[in-house]
Amino acid sequence: MSFDEKLEEARDGEGSMKINEMEQTKVSLMRTYVESQDPSSRDPSSQKADDLMIRRFLRARDLDVEKASALFLRYLKWRQTFVPNGSISLSQVRNEVAQNKMFLQGLDKQGRPISVVLGAKHFQYQGSLDEFKRFLVYAFDKICTRMPPGQEKFVVIGDLEGWGYSNSDMRAYLGALSILQDYYPERLGKLFIIHAPYIFMAIWKIVYPFIDKNTKKKIVLVEKTKLRSTLLEEIDESQLPQIYGGKLPLVPIQDS
Image (cartoon, rainbow, N blue to C red; front, top):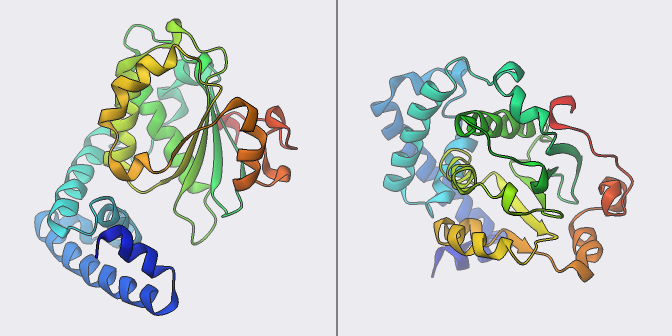
């Protein structure tokens, strides 16, 4: 039975117990290995290696302990280097925040926080890649703090209305994909790509091979004629942004 089939079985009562037991065993194995390689992960105050986080890395590697451990150890090293103070401050991402391109408000029907990204407001500037990566960490960390108890994932609406070649930033797109998949695995619940212009598809064809199979399953290219109905399948009208026919105003990520 494939891993996907096991997950399908896990939705049923007895199957759920089996998959949970399997995961818990592998979480313990992975914790032992990670702690032997990075003793600092044993410190409860660091929150580096809680069971839920380890489980997310395991799921990102189809419960392969060796691969998940390697990914997690790279994450710990990256976090220590890239976010040495534990968080990214607003002062470190002022240029990115000034573009006013990312918003956070509302929850979908599964209780997942909703973020809206306006692709036409992203512009590349000299030295912007490092700040863009810091901005992503600033945003992802902020989204994660908004998750209700028991929730681990978030939803993104990537709105490309008005997007053109001046917004095309391949390094930023690949950098965002790398950070999401390598350092925030199994955090993305769903990505709706809406209002995608024809010229965007050339960029999409370049980026698509770099997306892992688990992430690909979470991406939905939404037809313009089905935009509202598709979003309402996942998001109640009371939680949907006003610009898509809902009731909530967009709130900039820095103000959320």
